Amino acid sequence: MDLVEGQILPDVRITITRELIRAYAEASGDFNPIHLDDKVAREAGLPSVIAHGMLAMCLTMRLIREWFSTRARLSYIKVRFAEMVFPGDELIFSATIAAVDGKKCNLDLSVQKLDSSKVLTKANATVVLFEA
Image (cartoon, helix red, strand yellow):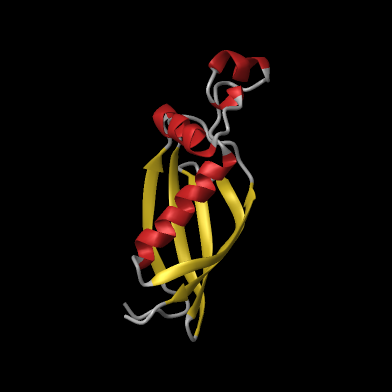
């Protein structure tokens, strides 16, 4: 795949489920009850449990790996968490190639809900490309 500035990578949609939230809690060791217990979440003023912010970032990193397969290594990622994610939310992950400089490829990333509210903002990443 030839990479060029402005190239848009294929969008990916993922529905956030309670099972995915629990799997992330188990993998990360973050068992904060606002992510796992509706009663505790409601007592904290939330309508239900919320997904870990890092879950959206980790899914973004996984998708970068899928977009580039084994042709690249993620060397940098930066995001700002902007919106809570609840079970049932469908997220749209997208990326645009911002620049290609030798073996480095800079990406502008977007993660948003179906209603267009941004889950991650100011999101960008750099991958180091390997020889094909």
